[in-house]
Image (cartoon, rainbow, N blue to C red; front, top):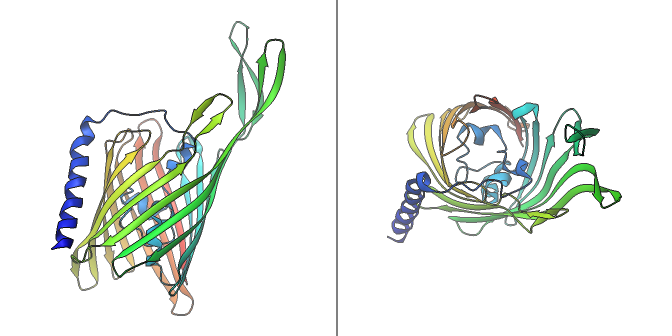
Length: 330
């Protein structure tokens, strides 16, 4: 009875968030280091980024650290995203499970801006600006995570990370004096997540909070990391012999945008081949996503190779985003 009441409450909260999405006021330009918002992993992206209650691999550390408890042995995941405007988003995650202790994980995300960028400075000329020297932005975040299953139904996880952004050196003029200022910020941030198995078939309820940290500041203007609260449900809705279909839905409350709902579906054949699709509601970019995955068992002793791909529609201006992931379970 308690379980059914809990699940009903969770569903009602999700419905409430969904119904209020269309009326929420957009909150823009209220966060920095926005590369932290780019979804990691082709599998999660293909499912519309509705991954909070699905998370069960090494990339769980980026979505819901509690999902790391689903890893039975060891796992490594590499991801590459061909992001908008020729930017490249790359990530790595590794997880190691220890019986009766928990699961430990490490993570790294790096943003590649490609060719150096020219400075633009204001001045008193006719154009009002001048083009200065070039610089190469540097953005990365590295972290460690830990998760543990406290009961047969409840798990918790935490991800502590160090985020850095460097935007080169600029010249600041005060009166008749000028000085060079290094534009860089860094901060410790924390992600936290829980996973609850309701006992109704394999229905999972999950909650995660990402990018909780102190305020940062460039010279004068303070800003915050893109703090994000997620609440999700996921469940298998069809199982026939060696085939299955699962559905997932996430209600998302970001710091710098109005509330969103993401939904996803995943089809598996013989735990070998997967097809995935999803949709992101109340999103400035187009919401359609889809992709596929392949699990290839090299041998019982050598482990399993995991290959995933995702396509995400973005906008008429920037086109689509393609993601590729490679994993190894051993």
